[in-house]
Amino acid sequence: MRPRAVAKRLLVPVGVLGSVAAAFAYVGSVDPNEPGHYPTCPLLALTGILCPGCGGLRSAHAFIHGDLLTAIGANAAAVVGYVVFGIGWVAWTVASARGRAWRLNPSGAQLWTIGAVLAVFSVVRNLPFGAWLAP
Image (cartoon, rainbow, N blue to C red; front, side, top):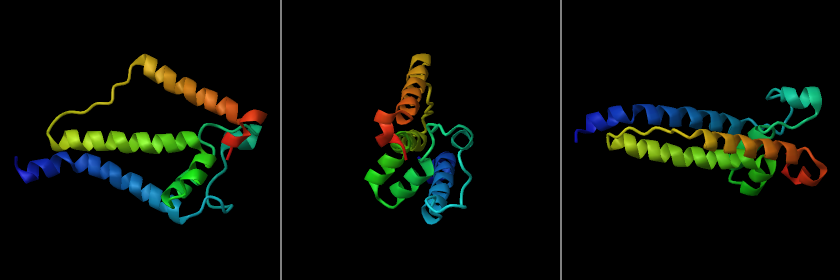
């Protein structure tokens, strides 16, 4: 196997990782807990309802700084997303290095399940007994 061919196959996965790392580096260096750095969630601003992404920047900031409990407290679904992304990225990179195609092709049932879990997460974090899920 030629090293140049492997490097070419890894170009896109490495580019994606670089983009995600740059975004995380920015969020890690610019604290979302300080007002004025990031826009407010429009749903939260207009209705007072937390969306599934509310607390995601604070979660990413805590995650980058190694504070996993604070990250989970800010947005548990986002932390799961970081882990799933990492696992998927590794699988994609290994497949690319080996010259194999890797496609993420979830079934309709899997997509509906993910949507249902996020919907339940959103509803529960907005109820009094689910306040522990709110950022």
